[in-house]
Length: 162
Image 1 (cartoon, one colour):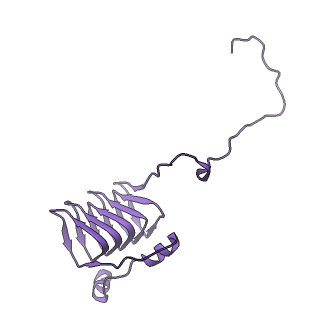
Image 2: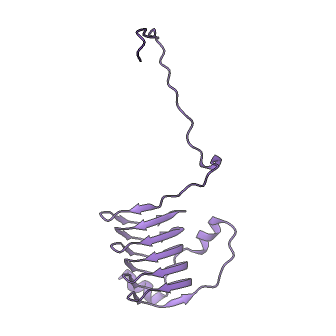
Image 3: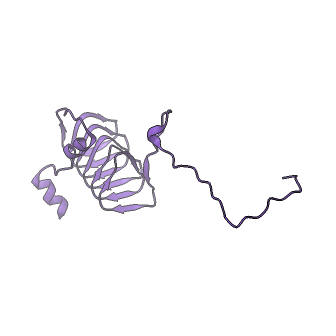
């Protein structure tokens, strides 16, 4: 920088890049950041993820994820299949999950299939709650196959289509 000598110009340009970061070789624990559907976003179609999803906006379609949080301003119209669900906003559709939490601000119209259910005072639920028998699952793909959303009953399915 302070040296008055300048390197000789070469005709070949050299570019050094580092190898992409490989999470599998990491020695420390990685923090996984959830996917966020922001408040000004509307998704029309199904959402599928092996990770955590936060819905602050609206989704019109089925959701199949590992963990789902519908925030207070968020809304989902469709069926949900997840390992863990926390609803603070609005849901119109069925939920199939190991653990479901309905916050005081939640508004759910549809059936809830669960292993563990927590309902805070003030939550609104119009539908049936049914306990699921625990299922032993060995792989993630088996988990998603068993958690595919299904209509609660034919009457509910036909009402949702009209």
